Image (cartoon, rainbow, N blue to C red; front, side, top):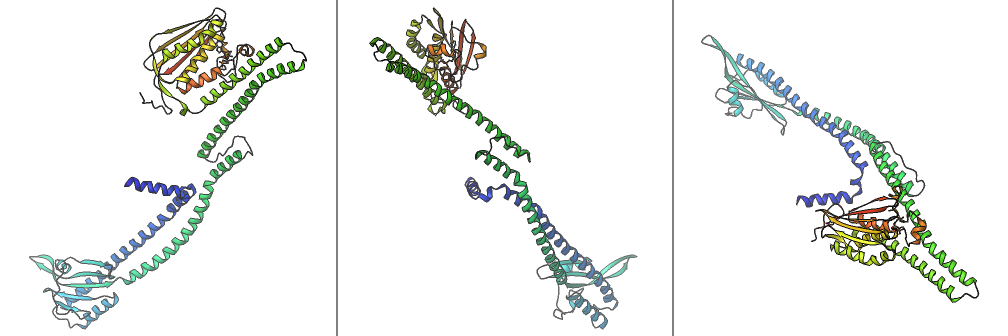
Length: 499
Ligand code: ADP
């Protein structure tokens, strides 16, 4: 239930653009910070005022009635209520405080009521009883707008030489709080007007600032748009905030990376065009020279046609290699993982390549430390072995050898392909995996290389989350070491659980 609610709220926030605006958040936050304290202050001060005014009124009225209580005793009013002086005084008091006064004697009988309603009646209430014990009480009835108080009519008597007060009667008086309420209303109205004026000013200031604060982010968007629309490809800079600086830095890095990618793409296209053009040029030259001669002997025709076929085959090989490379460049969704017998796969690969080795008089030896099975893409792993062994044969010497060594631990299997060939200079180590890179272009071309083999190999190794290393001594030989995990690890580091 709770999640559903949260989900609903999340969707609502996502759908209504205003809820996703930083400007709106800043606006609302500043508004709350600006206005809420003044509302709290208004309510607090007014409430405080009311309490204070009521307390003052109570103490004021109590003091007055305490004086009257003395008069009551002096005039023996509790026994005889005919005193005009006291009656006038009581009338005056009740008029002054817009209330009612009841005088209650020790028998709880009302001897005087300024409203003349309850005279002669008995009045027993909690407050009256309390008051007979010598305690003054007061109660504020907010709803009806009055304060009710009890004041003891106490006489000082001396009992056993000690002076104590004896409560003879009680004054039960009420006073209206209308004047307090009126003042409160006036104050409240004024405070509200002040608050509205303040709120208008605050809204203006907040609107202005929320706009100003958000401006650097708009500048970031504008700068990125300019790059996107092609007005500039220079790195952008919005140093106003650390946050904008971070966004811009990340964008500049992305821009630089895209430039590199674009450059390498352009270089790749240029290389591809060049590589594809070379065999075509040869074919054209061969065909032109045949066409240019009127009586060409059949043998020459055959020889030239043979050359043309070879060039077409080369063109075909380049195209096939390019297709493999493009396929490998794509995501690993294309990985077709299965459990493969690596020993068997290496043996088949070597069997296929032995005729080429024999032609070049190169001996191929396979040595396996232990039987290995691994979760790999069989086609791609086979391509890795073929390319490396083929290179070891191609770049070998007369009567040379190629040695393939297979080993494994509990995590990886390793294939070492070493040869007694021409070797690679250390400076070329990092370049040989680049597309179309060849140490000796003419030699590579001569033996049918495209410069794409090692690039394909490395991509296939990386798709298996493996590694490839090369070590070589020029003139003596080369050793490539490929290390591949026995269990396929998917992107994000998760192991494939298929058995
Ligand atoms: P190619 O199709 O030219 O063989 P590769 O990408 O397979 O292209 O290899 C790139 C270059 O690395 C080759 O042109 C060659 O100069 C060098 N190379 C690769 N393997 C070996 C090796 N075993 N011994 C010496 N040089 C090698």
